[in-house]
Image (cartoon, rainbow, N blue to C red):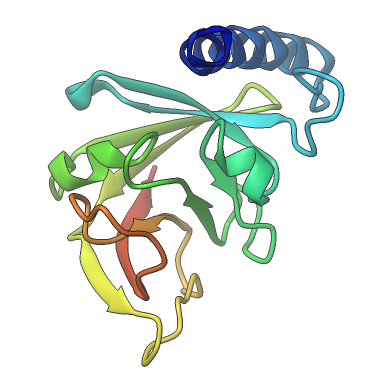
Length: 170
């Protein structure tokens, strides 16, 4: 019974700790770990107001980090830069909203330096990673949101990814 209760309380506690850590990170201008032992720390806050989404983004997409929040793929450019940055999250938790994200919707990303970056969502695409490589290269500044696909699949480990490109505005 205690283990069942912990499974319910753990994500709620993690959310509180992540939000507190994000506030500390903004204040210090450096990522602050939300709790000892987590291999990642907040570097941004992603907001899609049209879908009532506000999420903390962690600095690296390890298996441990993705259990708690969306995370930056470090092999891509920095979030908010003049490049394309990629953020990944699980399809059944943090990025479940991608199935409702429509082209033209505004994505706001506040980075740890306090700057607000505005992106406009493009058309979502399904990629089979057995045949196509995920790419975050482009001549223009942007953001790519990536999750597994299909959204309603019970199984895990599919080679399909749902990818939403977004173009930086302004």
